[in-house]
Length: 96
Image (tube, rainbow, N blue to C red; front, side, top):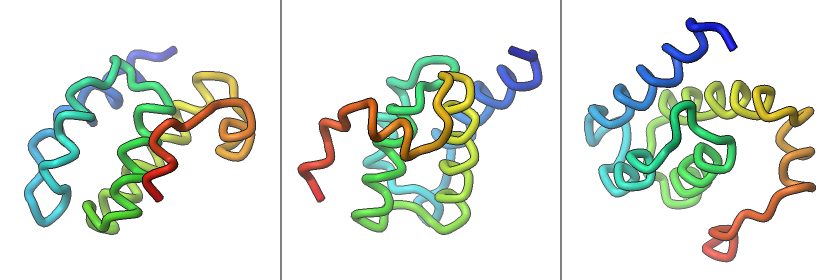
Protein backbone atom coordinates (compact mmCIF):
# COMPACT_ATOMS: atom_id res chain seq x y z
CA UNK A 1 0.00 0.00 0.00
CA UNK A 2 1.33 3.42 -0.87
CA UNK A 3 1.99 6.05 1.75
CA UNK A 4 -0.41 8.34 -0.15
CA UNK A 5 -3.21 5.81 0.43
CA UNK A 6 -2.33 5.50 4.14
CA UNK A 7 -2.25 9.28 4.50
CA UNK A 8 -5.68 9.52 2.82
CA UNK A 9 -7.15 7.05 5.30
CA UNK A 10 -5.68 8.72 8.40
CA UNK A 11 -6.48 12.27 7.32
CA UNK A 12 -9.98 11.20 6.29
CA UNK A 13 -10.76 9.92 9.79
CA UNK A 14 -9.49 13.18 11.30
CA UNK A 15 -11.58 15.21 8.85
CA UNK A 16 -14.72 13.23 9.63
CA UNK A 17 -14.24 13.68 13.36
CA UNK A 18 -14.05 17.46 12.95
CA UNK A 19 -16.97 17.78 10.53
CA UNK A 20 -19.68 20.30 11.29
CA UNK A 21 -23.20 19.25 12.28
CA UNK A 22 -24.36 20.37 8.84
CA UNK A 23 -22.06 17.78 7.24
CA UNK A 24 -22.18 14.84 9.66
CA UNK A 25 -24.29 14.15 12.73
CA UNK A 26 -22.15 13.79 15.84
CA UNK A 27 -23.98 10.55 16.65
CA UNK A 28 -21.64 8.88 14.14
CA UNK A 29 -18.45 10.04 15.88
CA UNK A 30 -18.21 7.09 18.33
CA UNK A 31 -18.36 4.63 15.41
CA UNK A 32 -15.75 6.56 13.41
CA UNK A 33 -13.46 6.84 16.45
CA UNK A 34 -13.39 3.02 16.62
CA UNK A 35 -12.23 2.67 13.01
CA UNK A 36 -8.97 0.85 12.39
CA UNK A 37 -6.21 2.62 10.52
CA UNK A 38 -6.87 2.20 7.67
CA UNK A 39 -10.58 1.56 8.25
CA UNK A 40 -12.11 -1.74 7.17
CA UNK A 41 -14.87 -1.80 4.59
CA UNK A 42 -17.40 -3.05 7.14
CA UNK A 43 -16.59 -0.13 9.46
CA UNK A 44 -17.13 2.43 6.69
CA UNK A 45 -20.23 0.67 5.42
CA UNK A 46 -21.86 0.68 8.86
CA UNK A 47 -21.49 4.45 9.18
CA UNK A 48 -22.56 5.07 5.57
CA UNK A 49 -25.62 2.81 5.91
CA UNK A 50 -26.74 4.47 9.13
CA UNK A 51 -26.21 7.92 7.64
CA UNK A 52 -28.24 6.97 4.56
CA UNK A 53 -31.09 5.40 6.54
CA UNK A 54 -31.44 8.18 9.09
CA UNK A 55 -30.29 11.25 7.06
CA UNK A 56 -27.26 11.83 9.27
CA UNK A 57 -24.84 13.11 6.61
CA UNK A 58 -24.80 15.61 3.77
CA UNK A 59 -24.60 14.49 0.15
CA UNK A 60 -20.95 15.57 0.16
CA UNK A 61 -20.17 13.30 3.13
CA UNK A 62 -21.96 10.40 1.48
CA UNK A 63 -19.70 10.82 -1.56
CA UNK A 64 -16.68 10.77 0.78
CA UNK A 65 -17.92 7.58 2.47
CA UNK A 66 -18.47 5.98 -0.94
CA UNK A 67 -14.95 6.86 -2.10
CA UNK A 68 -13.41 5.57 1.13
CA UNK A 69 -15.50 2.39 0.91
CA UNK A 70 -14.32 1.70 -2.65
CA UNK A 71 -10.68 2.04 -1.53
CA UNK A 72 -11.27 -0.29 1.43
CA UNK A 73 -13.06 -2.90 -0.69
CA UNK A 74 -10.16 -3.04 -3.16
CA UNK A 75 -7.62 -3.16 -0.33
CA UNK A 76 -9.49 -6.14 1.17
CA UNK A 77 -9.75 -7.97 -2.15
CA UNK A 78 -13.47 -7.57 -2.92
CA UNK A 79 -14.60 -7.00 -6.48
CA UNK A 80 -17.35 -4.56 -5.50
CA UNK A 81 -19.92 -3.83 -2.80
CA UNK A 82 -22.19 -6.69 -3.91
CA UNK A 83 -19.27 -9.12 -3.63
CA UNK A 84 -18.68 -7.85 -0.09
CA UNK A 85 -22.35 -8.15 0.91
CA UNK A 86 -22.51 -11.69 -0.52
CA UNK A 87 -19.59 -12.77 1.69
CA UNK A 88 -20.01 -10.73 4.87
CA UNK A 89 -22.75 -10.26 7.45
CA UNK A 90 -23.78 -6.72 8.36
CA UNK A 91 -25.08 -7.01 11.94
CA UNK A 92 -26.67 -3.55 11.97
CA UNK A 93 -28.85 -4.23 8.90
CA UNK A 94 -31.96 -5.21 10.94
CA UNK A 95 -32.15 -1.50 11.86
CA UNK A 96 -33.51 -0.78 8.40
